[in-house]
Length: 167
Length: 181
Image (tube, rainbow over all chains, first blue to last red; front, side):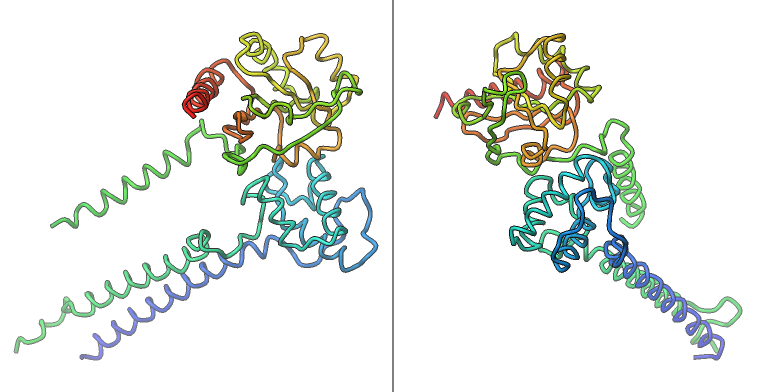
């Protein structure tokens, strides 16, 4: 391998690595998105019903209501929305928490009535595998395509160099 | 040899995707109801006109009926009211109403002024029945079959067109099935 050819292969490999890293970044940010949409600590939401006495229940209440979509506004959580339906859904969550229901039971109650769309955090289940796996799948396809292009090109003769094998 | 097809197929795929995604007729707010095919939630509420009367879907077991969610604050409900009156006059199926998060006085006035297509109207002022039905807007109209299962949900004002194209065929099919069973 001539130095120039080596340099070109190295550049190509750099491009490949860069592209893979970029794809991985995109994939990671896509996966991180649902979590990023629900910041960890914010002041108590619009809530006319006051705090729940038990602080543990109150923090669960805040976490759950941030993860439920307000279907009237559709890009707000029921913790952030002040429409009447959101208020009534907050009441529902509060009552279920006080009745000792688990987080899963509350999410199940909501998805049974409003569908999967009501959840901001898509659970990782067999039927959601494509959603969670798509970024990685696309990354693999991209990496495969770049690998093939680089391999084919690194075998091509350089324009200003006699083709290998000729004296 | 077949490689020239790759961009054509990809292009065709994109065209199909955009045709679906950018279709102006697609209502982005309308969500499929998870209740379809499942038992309709039971309810028993005060009648909006007569507080001493209970409106419930339990006595409707064995019948196909419409369940229509409305309110006086909902402009589209007023728009569909004529259609509901017309459907009621056809006497195909009973219509049960749900007056959702509303003012009782205004609701009674509405029914007296515009006419009452409903067999009974449940007064749902705390929204609990609506939550059980997965209601997130008004108007919404559900079709429930004789076995008490939700057959169809229409999220928009009722029109005679929707009634004829979406509801009547399902009602007829359900009746045929009932007759055969």
